[in-house]
Image (tube, rainbow, N blue to C red):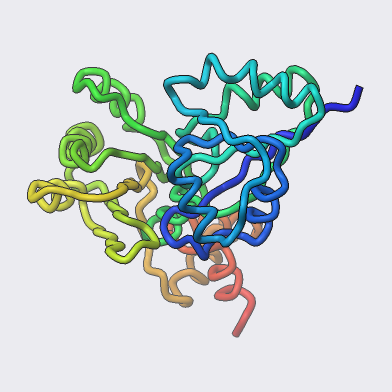
Length: 278
């Protein structure tokens, strides 16, 4: 029996024209479009200038468990199901995981339309190390649970990315400062790609003070990992000298470049160029 295809379609996080051309084709050609918010889907289709010909069903946190078997039946019947959420990639802190797991379990082909991501956009503009990172999603709402989660992350060496509701941003930053230290560098990325986009960078204590005046819009928080701060200068001479020192102690040049890049908080290619380009 030939099954259908589940398409996880990323949607713009701000500007509709960030949508890849394939998104419009997939939506227009789908047998079923499952949307977190059918009203937002209607607006997106109007912006993209397309008309849906397939069935449109809602698929959100409140009905995800009950609707997953219905959508799986459509896939097993050979239909092409396109899943969209309000913004970004389905299943990443959004509905979708249950359907993906059910589709994989039933040997249904799952593919994706890659597109805008608040996680990667915030990471890229944060100014914090990007060579290793982890996504922590939303912190628990209850203060005690939030504190325990952050305490467990105190030693995390990778840069951490969080989602947060605007009205909880100050409390989340305060809890981060308490667990990770007032001086831990961070960035609050607000309304990414939108008209009022704002990125506030600084020690967590400063970000708490900034958030005290109130935060509005979609929020993504990026926090530097433990011990990840640059402990040597980033100019070519300093990078070259640090690599030479490590090589002299027996470290291979390749490993030395990786470690120096991490210590300096710069891309590996910068260290490579400092070592190899006169």
